Length: 274
Ligand code: FES
Image (tube, rainbow, N blue to C red):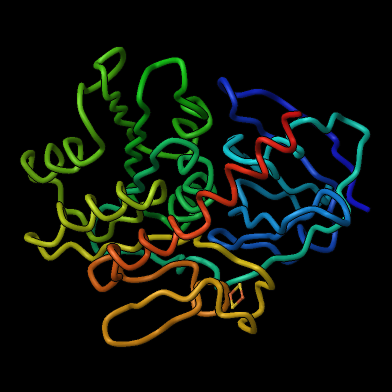
């Protein structure tokens, strides 16, 4: 069992939890993910690791309540335990010294998993700029954390309530316009956002990594649930990813697979709400 050591509501319906998982924390690297289960009946929830501490054995997860399983997770409190907490899974992000600036782009709760990547790339000697997007100012998360591990933070809000009015792609364009020598962009967030970022960087030939979080079941490459087309190849996000070349991912295919279980999920959410 994996005890919840800390719980915080970062913004409405978005929670951070620190979980006691020493064996996972010991091996965790930026970019990897875990799969958790709240209880025996629970759905497996894949979440990219938002932070880890090898000394204390803690893993930070950040999640948004969107369906039945995340509702059940959010209902747990400090002192409660999770049944399963499997990881670290997937390949870590490639951490190295770049010939130019590293830009991490996080949209919504996607900001959380960009944090350990930004920190590690900064520690590797890179200039790191973070672009953080949210619909409005009140749902922006982890701004101060991100400022502490980067050289610059650009915030965008859809409604202009804070930072640049518009989308994360506007901030990417702004960096290009001002002549920033961008060596790599890593974007994590809603699929549509990662697709837009990849489209924004493509004309400039900026290498762009996206972290995919499709439907997952076993997380070990056996079930095929997380398959995604990258270039001409079928890949499994759990074992081949979760990071892929954003310019090669078949985003329309990915989006249609994600819609497959929407009706069933709505029924289950209704059931949990009752
Ligand atoms: Fe089953 Fe990836 S989750 S193959």
